[in-house]
Image (cartoon, rainbow over all chains, first blue to last red; front, side, top):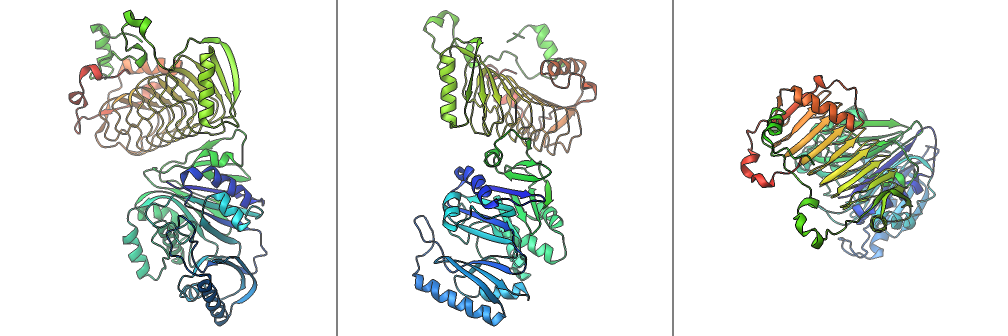
Length: 313
Length: 284
């Protein structure tokens, strides 16, 4: 089933980590296999924040193979050496969990080359690369993941998130949402639904040099939009094209450094409730997600079939 | 409920395009022999007094607790119950098989007022997906917008949304009337079998797709007709009925019904009458 939620503060910042946690926790009945956050924080915009993993969470319920922590250490060492080779300077390093790391990096060259090099290390995946974006995803519900990564104090402008019920792919971090819009910095996607022309699209996009890290159909949306933008389309243009190019049922959110968008398929088969005011837009699979941050009576509505909307911060 | 068995009324119904419907529908509450009333017990029904009014705050209750509380209040004879702070919770006000004035001061989540038979409900807010699903009888008025699958599979009663609704309104509808003050999304009246839908605003693509029977009236623009949905002549009887219905529903009283589009099943896909015995044809 899965649940998605998102919010954007226009002209202001707020405690988006805490707010998104509340919204996603309200949707936990839609899936607790994993939860993911894409948080757009308040930064000076100078350095990249790279969130990456060197292994999987192998806790109970995980579909991943257990690995020794020493394997993670080895992978980290290789990543560090590759960063050096690429000319990237690590300003700050946090190893939040044995398999999950956050690096602050100075780097000014091609991100695709950078990502390909780092992800050539077996078991390593860049979860996000951005100057304000940080993707944090792991097994468990929103509260569990928030507490594990101390997200409740993150201040920022906007955020999207996902509570996942794994259906067509594994219970693991690589299949969890949000997906980074590789190779674009600060682009992330969450999705609720099923894409039926995943393999057709994937083959075409891989032939064009795009990279897939999982077999989760939702990753296709991030890659699809990234490819459109690589060819000069705006985010909104790419999203409108996706209504035709992607087959199946879907509601998805996409966020960039300064915007947040939603798209709903032409069958309108997946739910979405939207609240829109001058200073805040909040949306989720169910109204209770919005109510977790706006308990008072508010005007909400369901976007219609085939609708695409984009808001700026 | 009016008995329209007489030939005169039956003829009128036929002139309104309801030629396939035998208007003898009853709600579950009438499916017993009055002579056996002393021995009859219908689970969940109570004698209530509409003048006996109370309020409950469900802010800190889950839906089971809230619904149980409503049941207990009806058992105590309360005929008017006001629900405070529903805050988008799912499945509130479901399975009420009783006369009752139920007022929600706020919005409901999914499946609000589902499977009910008899109450009059006013929701001073919005409703999520599948509001009043499987309603047998009664009236539900929503002051704001509604989500998708609004009035799915209802068999009777009036379901009124003063705002706009999502996709698949009246999917599998088997009777009753759905009235929308604003716009409606795609696949409105999908696989509809009986009853009527009135939309004062615009409607999305695939209107009445694969409908077996029933009638849809649209005041605004139609995105596209679905498979086997066709336009029919809007008769004087239709207009009379629409005016009366909109007036009673307190919605669009001054709406120019003469410009509405009437949509019915082309019956090239299915002939629903041939599939269903007469005695099973439900109420409208």
